[in-house]
Image (cartoon, rainbow, N blue to C red; front, top):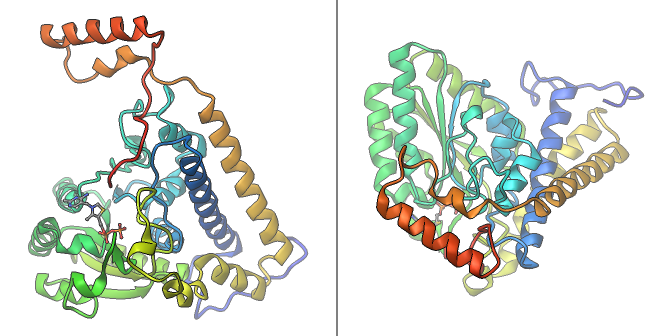
Length: 368
Ligand SMILES: Cc1ncc(C[n+]2csc(CCOP(=O)(O)OP(=O)(O)O)c2C)c(N)n1
């Protein structure tokens, strides 16, 4: 914190228990996500990684929820929650190794870029299949009930995912079992090209909670402090044994759905302009200056440090070796069956004939 300032935090806006250093950490967390996303898209556009999914405009949904959890709660993310992993402690280098699929990637380069998995952080593998994480989260939450821990599960999904069967199965079971799970719907108004109005006849997603016997709360998804407050209240409720909550965080997906998408084919660029005025990073930054937690110069310095840290991490990953081709056959069978042994021999012979020994992510674009 800037020692020259004397912060004064408005108690009606800043949740109890959060001090100036916490607010600065939240700000840095959101700025890091934005810097990382911009870098990922640049790397993809310049052909250095094969694919990316970014979360511009959704930074507060990640930091506000993550900051309200304990370090041992279980996280079942969708593909726009990399900031939650960062908050939990995933290093930028570890994340960059995943983007490039290097030999130092903790999941050995076997997943599409942006499909992180950090078992030691209880950040469970991102699945591209929409909705799967919700029922898994309920299972993990029920396991906590049985084992009588104080841990809860949190699962994230988009507005589009509420049309998947998994949403309804998960919400129903969690409601009946009073499972300690938070359902966090990031309502960013779109499921690729499908707008919310074509996704549901409800005016909001939180309404759907009523059918499953749990509270549903709509929160401004650009207000990190409001998100923190709502998540903490829902988490406390779950820990008290009172069951699940559906949180709907209202925001806007400013970027393309993924690097394979072109939003100009289905919406006007100007449509997102009203949301720009509610940018979550500018919003918290303005508050920090107003409350004398930081100066404008402090915020600029934080931004520069985040950009530098992201750049350094991606540089390291870009120059790291790719996984050895032989590792493709590891970790599935204790003893490799003869059929796979034959394929391994064939692959290694073909690679060696062409002068290669390693495997990287496929070139070209993924369809997600
Ligand atoms: C079961 C399934 N159906 C379809 C797809 C193709 N798909 C990938 S992302 C996506 C849209 C998801 O939208 P939403 O849930 O709102 O999340 P957002 O991308 O907006 O974060 C679709 C339909 C998929 N991956 N899995």
